Amino acid sequence: MKSEFFLNSRELENRDILTFLQGSAFLWGMSVFTTALVSKQRLIFGNAHIERLERGLGYLFEEVREPKQIENEIRESLQRSELFKDEKNESLKLRVTYFKDSSLKKLSLLIEVSEFKSNDEPVLLNSHEREERLRAFSQDIKIGNYAESLRLKNCLKSEVLFYNSEGYLEDSTIANIILRERETKEWKTPQGDFFKGIALTHLLKEPQSKITPCKIHRNEQENFDALFLVNSLRGLIPVKRWDDLELSPVMRSELLESYNKIKAKDFIQL
Image (tube, rainbow, N blue to C red):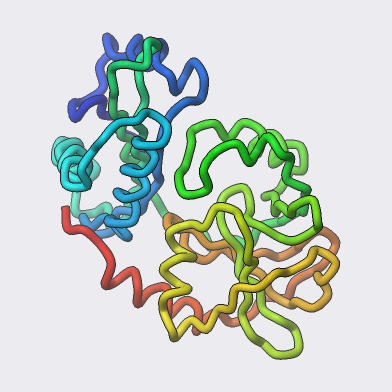
């Protein structure tokens, strides 16, 4: 998979490596980021991703960045990207990361543009209680330190679905979740104080999707026959097994139709 890197809106050079190695992202995992889909030179859910970055900069670094300034910084890098300019690349993965130097004074922007192909291959999902230290940051932003979540994912050899100390489901390592109730065939998603991603937030606003937020206890597994992970890069990701519960593949046409509908109307043209 081919990737390109840009630091402060110019192509990354060897002399720039020290900027990153001596920066807060590498030293302490202290960064603000978002990962987005670029489709046909459009930043999907662009306004929501930029708002996330704006909130994160204010929270972590006490930096004020206007949304238009962030948009222009992203656009400036992409206009230098050969992958972006190549019309054969219908979809690209965009990773936008803000970090500071070791004195926490100078702000830098690192942008990665990568080739991307959507993968609908079903995944495995295992449940695990979320430890209190993983709740340290505001739930409205994305902080660069994912070490504990990725450690669990590696140990369990699967994606991880977190639940709180009372046993109620939250989000997963990489996405929110949507479940189908076995008897009613209704779509549900966990409700609570945890990170709500851009894709799920948009789906909940779309009446056609008919997803109901509610508290779901991990002991209620047998009440569900289908489960999807959802994030703004990969969309809907089917789960084939949740702990010891085998999930049968189901048609997701109603969800997919809703998701494609909101993607088509919520983007920034780059």
